[in-house]
Length: 65
Image 1 (cartoon, rainbow, N blue to C red):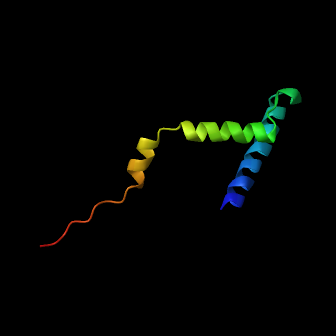
Image 2 (cartoon, one colour; image 1 turned 60 degrees about the horizontal axis):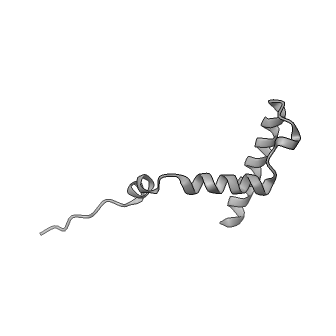
């Protein structure tokens, strides 16, 4: 599973570099792969977890009497 996530991160970074080039951002201002991965990790960790946890919880089953 980690391998798939790593491939997804690298693909996002390649797309980021391509978009930066199209926007005329100098190469020296682009994030390196490790910097990009750290930025992505910080972003994902900063998201509100309480909203995500409530969606993942399965509905409670009612007991029939």
